[in-house]
Length: 282
Picture 1 (tube, one colour):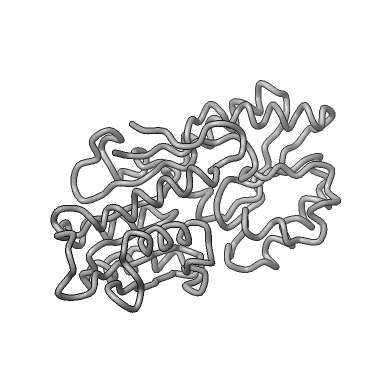
Picture 2 (cartoon, helix red, strand yellow):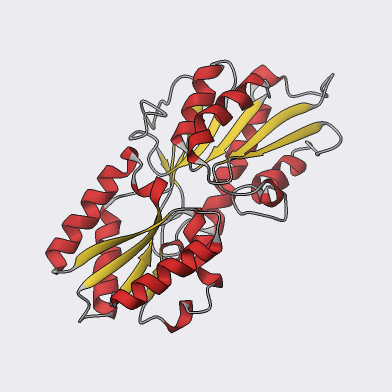
């Protein structure tokens, strides 16, 4: 097992680039014969929410460094590389079908972010295609059987890292707002109801109990709609949650900072700015 990142700063720039360089290097695996190809290599980029327009070298952080690294390795889109982009745009009912459809197109590699359903369905649909996954809990989601030896056609990185750090995050938030009684969690409903996040939920509730506070999940129905996050903030403000915390998902990290009331809340802890080390499956 290899760990990336370390000090506070979340999934650091170094960690992101190191992992995505690893993902890019998967295209140079022996079965792809690292030589001038007779045909362009094809990779499929797949996300549950992020729009395809953000899956570019200057776009979303989960894709931009990998595409830059591919270019550095000599794989240039439009020349010897074809990049196919897919998104379910937050429609959870389409995740499994999207994974199967991408696998059916038979790319050389599939890169999936933030969805065990998409990753598992793609991997099962065509076991001969390498699948690289960035996910909260690879083991809990059943995407791999071991971080040290993933097996099968899947590898990737855990983004939640050590669950014990979540209790520390909550303790830090309590120190910042010592009179807080309720901690609001802004989180997409599909993420909160994801069974692979049950260990995370237990850690949150146990930490809250020790600190004498009540965690309040504030569920966002449509994670691709910024107005849904505005409504979540309005509800939390009306309910007078004395602090708020966004679960470390790309949806909340990308939407929350643009909200006009974000800086004026008593405390808003962005998980993307707190300690979290992603774990890489070898």
